[in-house]
Each structure stands twice: as structure tokens, then as C-alpha cells.
Amino acid sequence: MSQITAHDAIGQALAEEMRRDERVVLFGEGVATKRADLAREFGTERVRNTPLAEAIIAGTAVGAAASGLRPVVDLLFAPFLAYSMDALVNSAGKLRYLSGGQFEFPMVAIAMTGAGWSVGGQHNHNLEAMFVHAPGLKVVMPSNVADFKGLLKAAIRDDNPVMFFVDIALAMAPGEAPESADHVVPIGRAAVLREGGDVTLVSYAKTVGACLGAADALAERGIHAEVIDLRTLKPLDEKAILRSVRKTGRLVVVHEANRLCGVGAEVSAIVSEHAFDALKAPVRRLAGPDAPAASSWALEQAAVPNADAVRDAVLAIVGERAAA
Image (cartoon, rainbow, N blue to C red):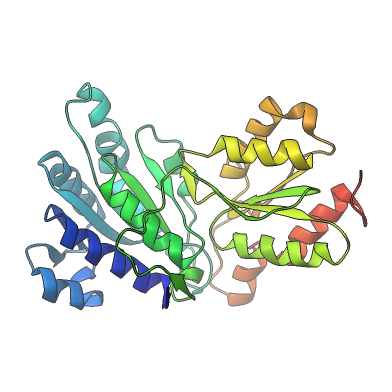
């Protein structure tokens, strides 16, 4: 294991997959500049900068995928994905289905999202739920360095288009990642980061850290929280969620994105439909406001659920001591 940042883990994954498969190409806004090591090793034919034209970048990636390549495109900030929706949703997401399975569309679109850099509403908008709703697309959003590497490798190897969201606050955060090129994290499998029997905390990306912090505080009160990191938002690991809720009887879902029609709403619905009889209390959702992101650091951070908010939500449904 080596101590690196998520940014470095992404670079490792790209390098390993480009060595493994010559069909993997990388292009996008500034990629040959910020990943100059990849440009030197693989050349400008496989690693190249593009104009600031997200629709063209995404459209080119779809064409490259249909032609037999395995493109990875970096579209920088998530709000810019709005320019590329036609290529990603109407082409990448649908053409394999429309071809009757005759074509594969192995491509990865990377975008940064979330609070942490105070970049304001034009560069910070959590759009992951929009792409979860688009048929044919897979969506991943890691919370730790090892998963950034392993999930990106899995995404590059997948024969379907994958949206890979990088939480800005985690991009430069240090962590451990296996040095082995065989480290691949399967898409569609959640991780139980902490076991407990009193309440289930379901989250992804930066708010996983808030859930782990809340679990520590709750343990001091005799309340044992189980923390699940979804890792993949589509396909969603429903079995892991239901298995945990049937054990604990309580659920709090936490994410930074807008609460309205967010991933938390889907998780809540799944539990209500398939594990209602196991619930001992109403499901709680903690999420961001239905408002553009503020450029003020203080206001930006106030919009993100923190460990104290998660702890208080749990106490509201469990009480000071875990119920039998």
C-alpha cells in the first residue's frame, strides 16, 4: 500500500489501464498538461488536450467508443456536463440498446463536483442523480483513495458508458491505495465500512466521512451505527442496503446533492418497498439545499451535512440509548 492522493490514484489507474490495453485513450480539457507524465509515456496520440467544448469532447468520445477505442474524457467541473448531455444521454446511454447489443460503448466521463474549493455555482453542482436517471449509463462516486483507483480501472474495463464523479474535497486528500495493477473494485458493490446493530447510515463521496465521524460520536453513547458506502450509484447495491436495514431497523441516508429527487430518495423508497416491516422508525434523509452552490466558504460548508448533523438525526430516531 502507498500513501497518495485521489488525484494520484486516478493517474495510476489511467497509466495501468493504458499499459494493459492500447485501445485506452485519454483526452479532455487540460489532461495532457496536468498529467504530463502520461503524455510523455503514451504520446500525444493517446493523451491530448482539447478545446473547451464539452459537447464536442463527449461526442468525440462516443464516436471513438463506437469505433473500437476505450476513451476516457475529462470534462473538468460537473456543471459543464450540461453541455454534453446529448452525447452522454441520447447517444452513449442509448446506442447499445438501439443496436440490439451489436455495439459496445466503453467510455468514461470524469467530472469534479461538490463543495470544497469555493468555486461557486457555475463550477459546483452535484448532478449525479440526473445521470442515475438516464438509461444505459453507470454512475460511480468514490469516497476514498483506494476506491478512486479501483473503480476507475473497473469503469475503463466496462463495456458500457460510465460517469465517474470526483468529489472536489477528496481530490487532494491523502489515503492508501494498493500498488498492484490487479486492484479493481467491482462496479455495483457497496462497502460496509463499519458494522453496527442500531442504525444504518448510507452515504457516498465526502459525506461518508461525516457518517464515520457520527458513528464514533454515537458509539460513546452506546449507539452502534452501521456505515455503508454506496461507491456506485448505478447500479445500486440494493441487497447491501436491505440486509443492513433488516438488521438495524433504522435508516439515515446522507449526501451533499439536492435532497429533492436525489439518490437518498431512491434508497428510502427501496427500503420502504422491501423492508418496511423491519423499520422501527421513519427513514431520515440529510442532504443539500435546493439552491445553487455559494462561493463563500462558510456558506458552502453550511450546505453540506456534517458529522454533528448526522449524529443528531440518529439521536432523533434512536434516543440517547439504543432501543431493543
